[in-house]
Image (tube, rainbow, N blue to C red; front, side, top):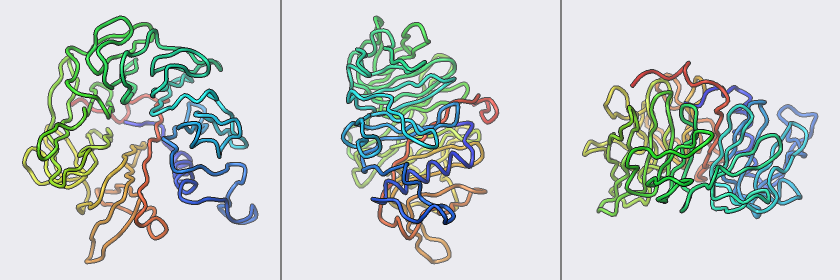
Length: 351
């Protein structure tokens, strides 16, 4: 579902991965692919990144983990190609961000951001932070852009002044519930042009289950139950809409009783394995570019009797291709790159 990703977006994405995996720049500016020492380094706690509508890179996390990037100890910083700009320096912990038409939306465990009171969700535009009315009364979990609004999930019973159970939509002027909401803390969200997908916290059953639900035509419908026989705390960690299908990744080995391992694709109402080889390990994150699906985690797969250990893959002609291998073997990468600046209509198809 993430339109507008270009090769430069991917380079930014991979560059930050490498920053997270190394402690200092290397090579000189005379060598191809040199490290720009102005970019700096960051510790492992950076929560995510996105590109804004002008193509600038935005990194977010917490004061402690972002302090190595910008001396002002920000939790949100923007890179213009030459230097970092701190967008938030008051220590607001940011968990998720999204951007559309120059407005940045942020969600996390804060009640104040940029010195402005805001309950867990806020927006940044024209150099100023502002709350989204009264925000949410509870715990933030996730956010995504959907249709012309912003959808926020978590654990709460009220958004703004309206009753809403664990999920609500911000229209730009007011909060709205999505029917009766969802029964548990909403951890993951994504959307196509005409449908919203949500993953609440796993059930307490044995084995644990993650249930993916779809919001379409003003109704919630269950799409599938994901099981983890090894008792993974999050059977489904990430979902993404790409090329007319929903992809789900995590640490699971069955969907509604059918054997599917760690990465699955939902198309035309049916779940099936994605790619040409089962992936072992944990899928931490999915990123849908305009022509390619990328996957990050601590992954191994077997092809031609050879075990491949990797941290970053792309799906090309329904075949997994490793992008980071020897240097990152055994290291898990989590990505939350988002680019919502363009329309979703080019890739999305009716469900």
